[in-house]
Image (cartoon, one colour):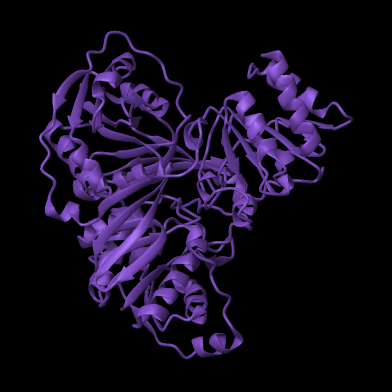
Length: 315
Length: 259
């Protein structure tokens, strides 16, 4: 069975959930082979084995010293050497770029923001702000597919080896032209990462100020990530990297709670594929209620604290 | 410093967007065309860099006839001139083919910097900037929230999930911008009038050095197999807060096993 390369997302050796989702999807297509960049593989190997990685290709941390290009070289090289049936990455901004460059190198095609993929590598997409569902496939070369986090339910496999294999990497000069000289971490706290969180609580214009505690407290009671609408980010109430929407992040959690968000297309495009949607808004005509599985017409400043208290009580 | 800004016309997200039933490409007649929103930030950044370092700002657009509206808008913001690659052979090109075609067109121009929006609001693939850098063999400075040019050196803040990376390179380079980078200007009446006289160099695919055997729907690297309207979401339960809205929401979450 042909190998399916899965680019691993990890933080200091901790495998992200989306990688277990990709390995699950990869098993439909062929034999999953994880591609690990950087240190910490010894702490991540068990998780990769659990979700079916027969092999783990390990590349040195140096690959991360330059923007995107070395990772694309790595994936293209492995795909060619191993005769891979497909390459799967998570649909983060950076990984989509890696997917694009890899496809150029392989002379193949790339499909992004995939919400499902089958054994024939036919992909499902939710487009135009969730209004249309399309199916697509790559017609030439090794398909490169970027799958949205929380789209596939991770299922453990039995008895995968996750055998390590070091990959000799020689980064070409052409891939060294954009050098990362510093990494700057901004306030984030202990909350899960927005695009892969199982629950997201977002605040909009209705929050009314840069005091986001009403949103954060509810998020923390649910172990959720915090998101923000464009209006909030534009007003400087919450940092840019938390923006959900057409020009921000796309999220697809099991539960999305929208507080004081009207639900304009700008926002819907980033959250419409969420499995469950709860909305709180003063305006009964707000379009967010068209999407909501449960909606409360009311002031978020009274409803959200009550909800937070109830959740904490029932834990 | 000479800058080329890539501008795409997209269907207005405020209108209903559709695919063509026959070839499953975007139905550009179904909705009003507007300039891709993030491209306005790219134009603004190019104009700011020009104000600081001198040079010329050229708009490069690939698209159908009606894309001239977006070119005019770009020129009325203050860009100097435009190149419009307009050829039926390009219809239905996917992201990779688009990057190839733009790279070829850029090969016919002189530039120190290429600036584009980090994604378009229609296809939203977010791969064109990276694929373009790959084709051109130039530094990829994408997802920039801040750009500084100093002589032949360029430094950006590349937005990441945890904050940003500081990335350095030498010109020429490809820069894609995110929304936080600036506040695009509104065209003044004077600039709108001037824009009507600015040169727009219309090119066929062949003029732009594009091999028509590599672009267009017939040669696409991907194919849309089918499409359908998304099934409507089942109508939810909407309650009015009577002092117990939070409790009722908690009941819903408990029922769904979130608490």
